Length: 201
Image (cartoon, rainbow, N blue to C red):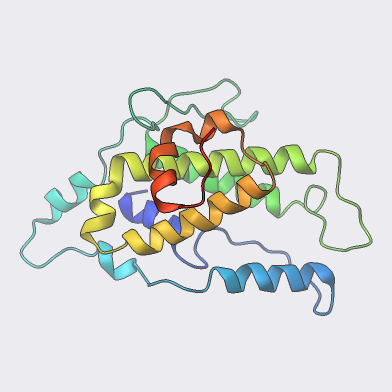
């Protein structure tokens, strides 16, 4: 996964490919449609990662593959563990970490034992802790992208779109206390600037 892969993370409809279908007329279908509508604004960034005129292909690829670790600056490094292939927390290049994360999340949300489709089936006790884990790991992608790729985001004109995605995500996780405050630390200064109503402790 290149920087373009990170950009796809923020692109409408490109993050996950849930296989489940919610029945029209149900509460979960209504909530699903509302969530989709809230993410419907923004630009298509696929063309933004294409080779610029006059640029060397190898140079262009090289600048997109420069993340040997999944980090959020010098104080934060994120290790991957999935209890299957990576049983112990393992250092991985950022593109590999993000790719594994997206696959892992897709598997979780498509597992109807974890994310039931029918309103007749109750959510398991593990549902909220799992959601917190998913959202914490997704927040780490924001951290990495903002800290290590912000110049690229600005250069392709994606800053407003990525900021909007971040604000939506941030407001959601803080509204329901889904990510612990320690995880939010790497972006707190930026968050205070772009989310004007953030109250600092």
